[in-house]
Image (tube, rainbow, N blue to C red; front, top):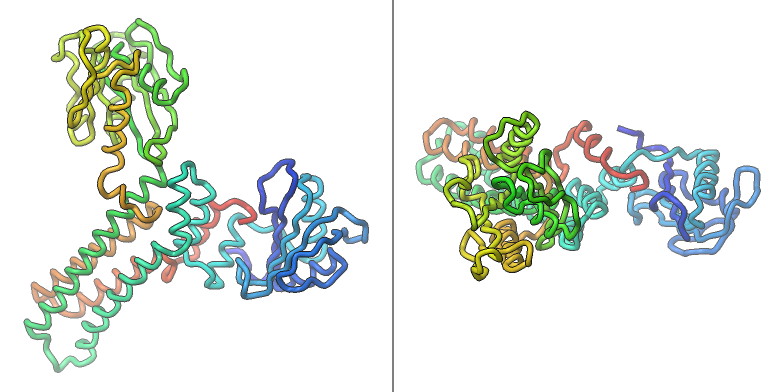
Amino acid sequence: MPSSTDSICAVATAPGRAALAVIRLSGPDAHAIAAQVTHRKLAVREAVLTGFYDAGGERIDQGIALYFKAPASFSGEDLVEFHSHGSPVVCDLLLDTLCAHGARLAEPGEFSLRAFLNHKIDLAQAEAIADLIASSTEQCARLANRSLQGLFSARVQETLERLVAVRAGIEAYLDFPDEDLDVQHAEHFCEQLDALGAEITELLEQAQAGERMNTGATLAIAGAPNVGKSSLINALAQSDLAIVTDTPGTTRDPVAADIEIAGMPVHVVDTAGVRNTEDAIEREGIARTRRTLAQADLVVWMDDVTQPPGAQAPPEEVDAARRIRAHNKIDLTGRAPEALEDEVYLSVKTASGLQALIDLIRARLQGDEQASTPFLARRRHRLALQRTREHIRAAAQGLREGRGLELAGEDLRLAQQALGEITGEFSSDDLLGRIFSEFCIGK
């Protein structure tokens, strides 16, 4: 963990030449250092046009300086922003000057870390900042902004308060060992824990959907050779990514593209055609295809309507819950496009029925819970919620089986700790270091 007593500085805007750049300075000496750089005392929250001077008094640039006094700043410390011209040389000169006056270069995510340590944001909100910056779709940006505003944290905090209340009620009996917990009170606690478990389950489902929105879904396009898989990925990506020929077995290695469907980032993989072959390279491609199919969130299994259907059946690892059947090349038979519950008749070549397939993919990836996802989430949030639910269920089961209040109280302590990890109420330095090291410098 870096020291929080130093004054730190960094360029907060993207690297490279631009019209403007923003240099941040935060820490106990920020105001005094800014006075040496601008040759003036900055007033609170007053943007001033001023010169920026190096340690020798030579003018570097002219721009805007803006001072935020602690604790009313992003970091919770004295913070100054220098809005300069966006030359990398000018930015470097300003950073050198700030360091010459006692500041040091910030580490990745250190401004956000200080905001967390100074209780300006919680840990989930800090992660939402990084997610907002990294948003690849409009929907991801909107959901990340909701998490940044505290929607996810508020849900977690409400649940945490109810959990603490149940735990306090149980531990009150531990303080008075002469009073036994009767059946009626035990069942009352169990009902409260069951309600908490249901609440955690709902929150977990939303977090899982939010995690998928954050990380994206994997869509595999598979089938026998020469059924139109490469043509389909080219159509979805609107680009000639995969080679399309009449020769079976052209695709050996999976070809991938990142697209957007229903506001969700989707990683689409065109796999090698699945068939029996003596070609060693093609066999390796098919083996990779099977691994991709096992890991994909959704599989579009394609076949050729002009060929016998029995030889084109999907393998066992492509279960129906993760599968859409796409019957291609209807233009060769004169059949009209048709969309059914989990299959589509289409022609990728003429685009007839293609939109129906896209709509079905959207519906399967989005799902009912996805449509109501209120926030983005991360894998660690999901795992924390799963541990919380496990400990709550263990406490309720222990009470029903009469295993003792001490064990139930310990399970609820562990549940509280797991849930508190989401917002940072319980967090280790290792966890904080890992999270904030993923941030860009200057944020």
